[in-house]
Length: 347
Image: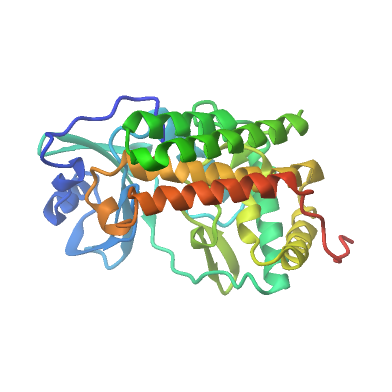
């Protein structure tokens, strides 16, 4: 994953996150006026370090320490501004807390390592029941409202989801890291190049393409369901891109199931925003870009101890052989006609 700033450096024997001891986290929060009572729980997050913190007043917050060097301050603040803009439009989203002095982003230094963090209200919820068509219609309405806000203007500093950024550049970073075993290298590179050629053609065929502000990583794990409906968490991957990016990860199963699911999602979505059906041709290309980008993401973070522990199967001959096979399958999938809508009336 790319950034507009240079990575903060750590000694070769350790990772910057090693400085985030429980006491260091509590001290950093205390300096921002968030006084913990000593109880701290690290939450599941690979990219950043996220903690549930209980405060002296009996409340609880979620503190997010950003990975050093990934985003510039301007990019993080655009993420925060988008979340606050969504909240102001009554789109359910977990937005950062505005702390003393009006800041949402706090700078601190822990054992010589600079960090930036933000605090969020704690919100619980469960995953959405994606097999239920009414739930999908509700999610469509929800994302339609989010995109109606996102379409008002683009991000100025955050990245754009396109074949170059998420595909060609990701491939080049993987090759530069020299991680692929020699026996798998040529096969993976040929499969990746063939996939990128198909992706480039698919994006070229739907130009001009409307580009809006997106959640960017709208998989079910980032959607929490409460009694009053869904709300969005984690805008860390917010970007400029086509609307279908925030919709296709809600679909699963065989083509017939996906057609019905898609129709349900769009039945809700179109109540708040027009959808360009040409973007349906980008579902498989976007799925393929996610595969390539995901490999680059893991590879670039392999020195973070959390990654070998979470992805022990990464990097060996079996992994790259499987990726080669899947890329060939995606080339075939991208050659098929785009997904069509199922039998649900938009009226």
